[in-house]
Length: 512
Image 1: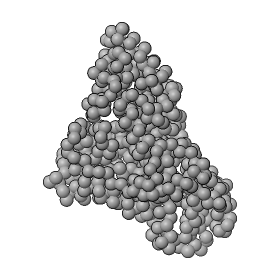
Image 2: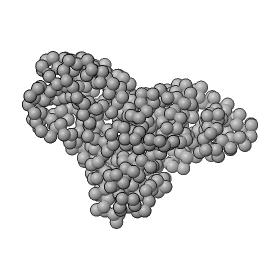
Image 3: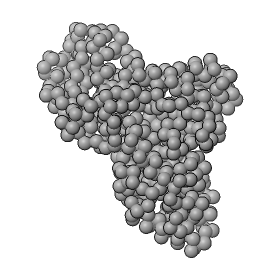
Image 4: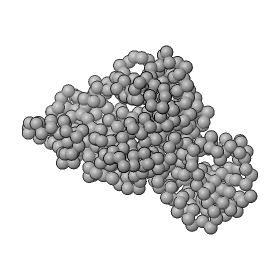
């Protein structure tokens, strides 16, 4: 039998993949930590550490199961620090006759590996990662001939197709497909929120390696208390902890914001899933099993909100990514060109909601979806920031950010740079929404109730200025009609005040 090299990327840590179920003495697995992958964008230091530790644990587990593994740590003397050179070296050294890899979930790497294989003088083959519910092309097939790609219709189809929370072929459990209206409660101190499930690991050794190799990162880290799960066993513990302690109130407070609570009832499973240590199927099945065993204590709105995020939104965003790439990455329909404010890297701002959300991102490499969308993304869009800058920050700062999920959420959902492929209207708001969903505004220097003046909430000015600046673009958007009508009725003096202060904020965001 020919000698085969199988290459595994850092986000392909799928223990259940068919590759690993049988030992084969003619197969060698290869994994590497490279400066090429740490350097294409400036990543949060916790993100780099989490991937390196998870990759090392995965490689060790393969070895324990009897598989042959070659692993290059970041400071390995043999490490060429880029994918093609490392592969060339091993193919030659090990006298490899056949090369295999798993389909990457990032377009950049997909092209790189295809190009590499086209130049090989040995045979090669690519395989599915066996992780997602859908294939890359499923979204395109599902929406073929339709004017809009609405996630809700895709989500319902997925529920039917996989028999998830269904009474029969057509009727959903509870009689409703979507309980989103029940997922918008403001948390005011009760019910009590259990501490997040964390793992206090000493990662000083990894940090020394990063420093020695001059790996440039962003964000903050405690070398004695690294909290994230980096093995399958730890990921399963986080999943069980979510089911037993957080699921009961997850849906209710899914969109809530609070100065004293970073994680609320969120699962914090996104890194475990996006690295593929946990599969979406097992996460959904585990949470559903727990729900069915505890239906007397857990409302259907809690579990449906969780399932929708994974079965609906996660799969939908991946499908959009593969349907629209590579052009999607350069879309800028609103023609925004401003620089992302410096405080996204420092957290130094008097705007309390932004201060909390940015500092949480820098401290924990994590923020939940409303912080990302309606505070950080909202401000970036209202200040008409270049989506390239927004993408680079989001892709770097969050531990779960891999381009297939980050790009569609940021450039599409958050920045409306795709012109409406993902969302039918921009997700922008004044300070009122932020105040409605949390307590950030209570201790802020600026007053959310004020629309004008030096102490008015900057979001209030920026919101109307944005609508004014982009009114031509939104002329044909039915969902924007009401707000555009209010804009037209606004007194000229009031609008001028919004515009003038907004220009001040955009020019000098560090002063706010």
